[in-house]
Length: 173
Image 1 (cartoon, helix red, strand yellow):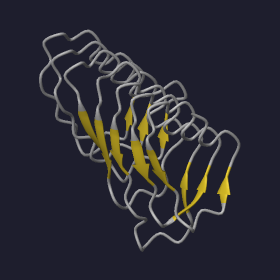
Image 2 (image 1 turned 60 degrees about the vertical axis):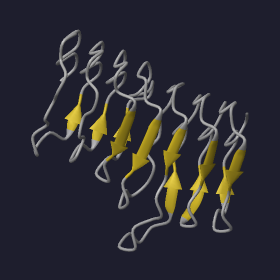
Image 3 (image 1 turned 90 degrees about the horizontal axis):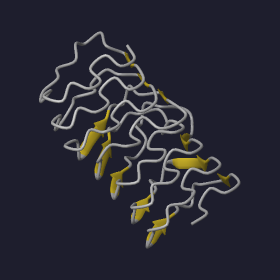
Image 4 (image 1 turned 45 degrees about the horizontal axis):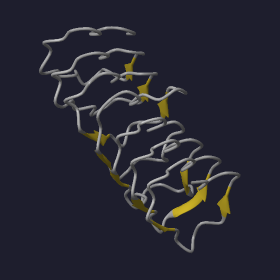
C-alpha cells in the first residue's frame, strides 16, 4: 500500500512474499539504508516507490512487471544500473521516468514464447539524464513517444532493423 514503509530510516532489508503484485506510491520513500529489493512477482509499481532510497543503486526489473506510476517509480532514488529480466512482455510506460541517476540499462531480447512484437512504451526512460548509451534489442519493433526523451548524456544508441515505428520525440536529446 502507499507509504507502507515510508520514513523507515533504519530499514535495511525487505523480503516480499510471492503474492505481492502491487507496490503503492511512496511505499519505500525515504528509506536511505535499503540497499536492494527483489521485486520477483511484482506486476505494478506506483509513483515514487523508491524516492529517497539513496543506498539502492541497482535493480532488476522482473519479467512480471506490466505497469508503473506516471510520475516515475524510481524518481528520487539513486539507481545507477538496471537489468530487465528476459521474458518481460514489453518495457512499461514510465518505467524509469525521471530517474536522473540511471547510467546503464540492460534490455533483453524478447522471450521466444511471446507472440506480439516487443515494444518500448512512452516515457519509459524519459529524463534519464545520466543514461549514456543503450542497445535496443533486435526483437523491438516499436518505440513509443518520448521513450528516451531528454536523455542528455547519450553517446551511443543502436536501433535495430526490426524497429518499424518511432513515435514523436522518441529520442530528443
